[in-house]
Amino acid sequence: MTDRELSVISAQSTWQGFRQMLPIAGFVMIFGAAFGLAALQQGLDIATILWMSALVFAGASQFATLEFWGAEVPVFTLILTVFAINARHLLMGATLYPWLQHVPPRRRYGVMTVASDANWAMAMQAFGRAQPGFGVLFGGGLALWLAWIAGTWLGVEVGDLISDGRRWGLDMVMGCFLLALVAGGKRSPRTILIWIVSAAASLAAYEYLPENTHVVIGAIAGGVIGMVWLEKTS
Amino acid sequence: MSIATSGWGPVWIVLIMAVVTLITRWGGVFIMGFVPIGERTRNFIAAMSGSVLVALLAPMALEGDGGARLALLTTALVMFAVKKPLVASTAGILVAALYRQL
Image 1: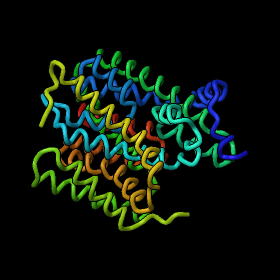
Image 2: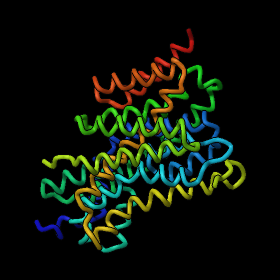
Image 3: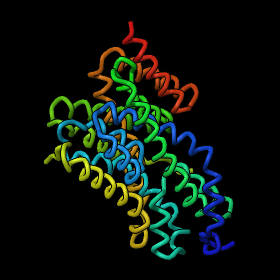
């Protein structure tokens, strides 16, 4: 099949992708519950939590935002942090471009609206096997989106029952979850150097620079190392 | 500049997050229509998406109580061993809870 033929999006392939993603959606629902719970413990109101999951639909950045949530939220830190964490979406769009370019603009941006890690990976696998991949990107993305919202709601419901979250370690939900994401990534001398530089820059900024600059400083420091020491492409 | 988290504040915060995230979802495809994303830019973006999390966590580990530190340590170790984020985070949270019950 040509790239153009592989780029077809139909109701049937979307439904198929939706069903294909259901097992992973189950896990996403549990992560959503963890977010709902953590957000409630952080003092966000229920409507804000649910709208955030529905409109942002990007777990790590939502967890990270809780870290700044106080009486006020610093705008530039918020924007830069959310951008830095979600910048990997830029790469997803770029890697899907060879097939997306054959899709009419409205649909092209429509399917990218629900792009996230799992459905992107499955779409790329499908294209790699010379099979159409946009069914699982779009249908699978919808499944993940619904699971994320449902899970968040579940977490909010459960969280209402727990008064002293700290005693039960619930203030660590966000930290442990984000750390698990980092630790689950590829480990190579290059990645470890990126982590060390980023942690050191973050701690230095935390100590000597204005409040909340440490995240952005650490992110950029790590990014620069990654740009200087290029990953070997296999 | 800051937004208060009372009144309409949270609505603005959620909208800002939603727009920024949408820009990242649409931006890659949009940019590729003009100039392909090069090797160095790709490496910068990939490294940054991981290091932003490390930068967020480092002060938590430094400033946290024994429970917080043990929780993070447990999460990392379990993650290295079994590679399941859910199992690793749960183990970390349990350790923090146990530590604080004692």
